Image (cartoon, rainbow, N blue to C red):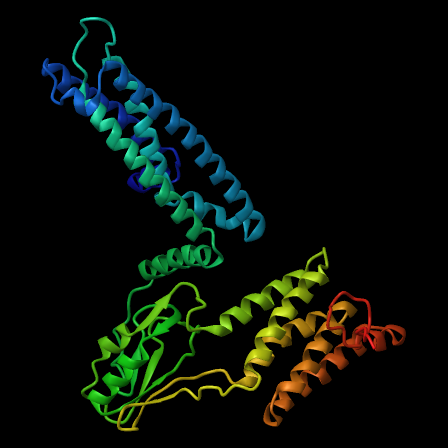
Length: 419
């Protein structure tokens, strides 16, 4: 119990690792200065480290720059933590502050600063002074480079960590680790020959379709991707369903050809772009600011994107090899799926905003003019549900005005026609 309390107390102290960095800088300075003083002729030529005045300027500049950098990094860290508290949850701050990556970066800054400060005492700029401590100056330059790399690591690490996906994964991974320690692992079930199970958890962001088709052809079977592109897959969940005899299938290679990450990406996943635009509109309509104009701007982009694909053929998700044998089946969104993804949630939130409903009416009416007949029902459904939402939210006096198409989206009513 005593060991647990000591380890727990040290783990909760944010200053432990940075303090160790400061102490390491002092010790390293003492060592390098002692080595330089034992070599009276100097270990390195002045052509490399400069004269005493140059060495003093180098150490002073490094110390000044690093202490300024450290103060800026600490300030940015505190501001980021405050934003995370307000944007996500106050209870997630503990996980942010306990992160070791940021603490190691600050430790490097502290080591560089204390090394430069304590090494200045070895510089003698007077006439007939001691040789330039070349090893000390060279070490200071190396620590300055390390501080620059630590800064890049800190910015990259903090940027990824403060994403929604980064914060969720930070807490989720910690929870998963605790569950694995708390509950013993059950014997692994025998894997079904007709399924390829996922070894990791994450969103599907890429799959090498050509390589999967080639692997399915080599094995003499057909592969069906169970999740769609962008779907989240949990550990042990079905990743691929095997149709036919999959005895020769290289399952590890199939897993390798399907990439999982902690967050969806735009590449190969156009639905994610629609999802993010809809999120912006929902936030604009769901906050106290009631920013209907932002929602209209989102509808403009959604309208533009849907109009561009309204009369284009959609892939059916069936990929064949050169012998015209079906080898890969992938779930894909059809026209109705994209229309629902773009408009369903905005429509539900926009019933009480005439500016937004007028722009939705105009966008849907315009899509009807370019969509082929088989795609008209999806648009008609949105128009009917939009009218129902306006009926529920607005009084009779405002209802008709809220359904007048307004392609400009400026809330001025019906479109102006110049004759």
